[in-house]
Structures are given as structure tokens and as C-alpha cells.
Image (tube, rainbow, N blue to C red; front, side, top):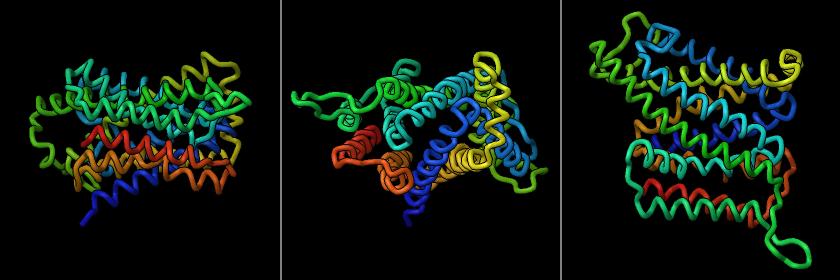
Amino acid sequence: MYLGELISLGVAFSWTATALFSEVASKRMGSLPLNVVRMVLSLSLLSLTLWLTIGTPYPLMADGKTWLWLSLSGLVGYALGDWCLFQSYILMGSRVGQLFMTLASPSAALTAWILLGESMRPLALAGMIITLLGISMSVLNRGGDSKRLQLKLPPKGILLGVCAGMCQGVGLVLSKVGMEHYEAALALQGIDDLSQWVSPTAWLPLPLSFMMPFASTMIRAITGLAGFSIALFLLSHNGMRRLQTAVSNRKAMYCALGAAIFGPFVGVSLSLMATLYTHAGIAQTIMSLTPVLIILPSWLLFKQKVTVWEVAGAFICVFGVSLFFV
């Protein structure tokens, strides 16, 4: 009983570990070198997983439309979104940075309304307002003799956090469109029932319905790596030297490996498994607990000062996200 709920909680802990590892690695490597290293590690893990489970180390039978939409998702969600997120970790820390990721749900809802014509329910609109209220409680305080509300975080960090959360939501919708095209491409190849198709050449065969999201994630990661590589080697100064310095930092590399394992690899795996055993809305709400779960380790590991007001803001954000799935 409650297996799906327990797996969802495991995802929230996995995202928490990812954020903590990424904060340390970002401050030691810089966000661009970290993301190049993280994408290479993630692609290696995904390729090995696909080879073991479907017999090929690359996305099976993905057509042009699939690559187009999933590549767009990778550019928005990985290349732009993760760069903004890890930059915000440098300026504000992972605890506050993760708080802005609760904007992914309202951003996804708005994008789905624009691109897919999905309806916006009143509770979803209320969820947006409540989520924004929770974030405001965490980034504003009363200061000075006037006791007026003022920002207690750098405006650049807030802008990066907002961009990261919005890119996550937009990338999610683009991924959904890409996976729909992927299903259509597989159907044209005679694979109509993904839950029944298993590769005869795989070492650990699993149904294609379970592994298709991993293949989709790999396409996104390929595009993300391309975007980060262009930004590091062509658009920034001394990109190769920065990457060599980053790779030579042993502690940073350990943290990058932790971010890759607990992020795109374990996190994605568990999130997919969770939806098999419980309702997607319940799973998503529990997985959104990361801004709450990260408070204690941030205080213990990084000695970050946490106020009651900020804790309340984190809980309010999670409550706002939950309204999207009621």
C-alpha cells in the first residue's frame, strides 16, 4: 500500500540531493562547465540504461518531429532553464533556488493553454496566486525605519530563479508534445501497444512504454549538451581552460556525479515509476515537496539562516502547486 506515494517522496528527496550537489559544484566549477559535465555523465547513464533495457544505446525509431519538439524542450528546459537555475544557486543558494521551481506548474499550465488549448480551471488560477504569494513571502521582508517591504535577495538571482521555473514548465509541455509524436512514430513502425513490446536482444528487457520517456530524456540531454557546449566554447572566454579546471577539481566532480545520478537518472526513473502506482496529481504534489525538504540540510550543511516566514512561504508554495492537481 502507498507504494506510489513512497516512491514520489523518494523523488522529492532525490531532487533535494540534486540541488545540494549542484550548489556545491556550481560554486566550484561555474554553471556552464558543470552543465557540460553533468550532461555528459547523464547521457552516459541513459545510453547504458537504454542498451540494457531495449537493446540499443540511443532513442529507438524517433522521427524528425520527435527530435524537433524534444530538442526544443531540451533547449528551453536544459540549456536555458538549468543554466538559470545553477546561476541562481551561486547567487542565492539551492534552498531559495528550488523555491522558484514551484513556478513550473503555473508555467506549464499557461503553456498548455496556449499551445494545446487545454482549459484553465479556477483552482489552477488560485494555485498560481497562492504559489506567487508563497514565493513573495520568502523573498521580501520589512527593513529599515520605514518597515516597508523590500527585496532581501539580489534582483539578478530572483530573475534567474523565475526564468528557471518558467523554463521548466514550458519544457515540460514541449516534452509532452514530443512524446506524443514519438508514440505516433512508433505506431507507424507497427508498435501500437508499447506496454507489450519488449526487445528480444536486451539484457534486462523492459516494456517500451516504461523506457520511452528515458529515450525522450536522452534526446533532450543531447540538445542540452549541444547548447551548453556552444555557450561554453564559443560564447564565453577560455571555455576549454574553464572545463579543464573544473574537471581537475575532485570535490566538484564528485558533486557533479551526484547531481547527474540523483537528477536526470534516479529522479526521472523514480518519477516515472511513481505514476505507475498512484495518481499523477498525487505523485506530482508529493514530488513538489523539495523546497520544504531542502530547508533542514541547507541549514545543517551550509549554515544558511532560515526564518519562520521563509518556511511558511515554502509550505504555501507547495499548497499552491497541489491545487493544480485537485
